[in-house]
Amino acid sequence: MIYPVILSGGSGTRLWPLSREAFPKQLLPLFSERSLLQDTVERLRDPTLFAAPLLIANHEHRFLIAEQLRSIGVEPAAIVLEPFGRNTAPAAALAALLLERRDPDAVMALFPADHAIPDVAALRRALEAATPAAEEGRLITFGVQPTLPETGYGYIRVGDALAGLSGVREVVRFVEKPDGATAAQYLESGDYLWNSGIFMMRTTVFLEELRRLQPAVIEAAQAALTAAHSDFDFLRVDGEAFAQSPSLSIDYAVMEHTSRAAVVPMNCGWSDVGAWQALWQLEEKDADANVSKGPVRLSTTRESYFRSEDGRLLVGIGVENLIVVATKDATLVTTRDCASQVGKLVQDLKAEGYSETTLPPVVYRPWGTYEDLAEDDRFRVKRIVVKPGASLSLQYHHHRSEHWVVVEGEAEVECDDTRLTVRPNESVYIPTGARHRLKNAQSDPLVLIEVQCGDYVGEDDIVRLEDNYGRTEEIEPRADEPVSTREDS
View (cartoon, rainbow, N blue to C red):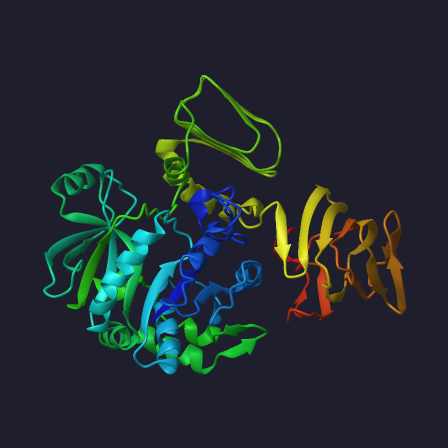
């Protein structure tokens, strides 16, 4: 039995403007109706080979992840919440410690949540080949046969086959991302594989090596779990203890320094979907080598990727080698050659205060979604969808009043001492300072238009009094610092 561990802490900034900090690429349906996370989980559903998955995730994504798992009928072993990212080694340490409690002989396999693997049968063959080596105490990484001189991946130089372990080879060394000329040499030599970032190992062996090589990582993970607490369906590790861990990758913390490393080559169509260029490579193309997503019309255009996410027509004429991605609130235009630079641009935009780097046009919350339709200094219009049986927190605002107009469904409204039902084409007024709550008690979604008016309409002017999702902190704007106007609800 293999214990799958899915690492879902990345932000996928190089796939902006589709991928955002609050809704990163692993949660997006990039290739089909399923997200990359759901695809990862689906690959590991065979109960004859895999135990229930354990997920290590950013706490900001917890409700989205839980809902995506529920929608495909998967009950995870646990969803462990990191208060902030500390790279893959601390996350793997948390998983190994938890699995060791359950099964001292556990063999865990670590999978990033945001990779594409079209050939699942080839992945399974690689995992089956790796299992005996992992049981013998080897720390296994999986290498991908390179198809081009890619400079965005790390490489593994492979050595001789391990005696008695079919399909498993020695690791000569790990190599950081090379320049173009070096990558071409690696490809020509045939001695190098791409580093997939997938690992398999016995938990006890990994923890032993981690204690020897990076004791601060294991000590912080142990302390964080000792002080962890349950939060609804999640296990929330202690933030103060977890912050003491160095931020290290599994490769740097252990794999590059251990004598137990081994590699299993695999040819499964793997991609880390790290940039828009990767999506262009993976997707089916037309006769001119173009990829089109959404309402797109192209003429005399070649080798380009056009994607319209907001329903508006996107047209390309007489261009080539372009990436064009349009969402409701942002549009990216770049060449395929420069697509890897998007992540750096997003960092700069975030530092300048652009909320488009953080929140998607449709913001997902545990109770449903909201979408901004119009906004100015003293008003804001939102489309709100509340899931069946869900409700927003009991709250009030210091600076704004709200008008709710029901479009579909029935709203149960609590406003101070008043309780009423609001039906389609009816409205209700929520005065500034009134304690209020919105609930959908019906079996269909509730859709309404909210109009906010006041001297400040930022989403951080919320004081929560009660909440079904454990979010009762006060979120109030401070006069001495700028605030985002699109954060929470």
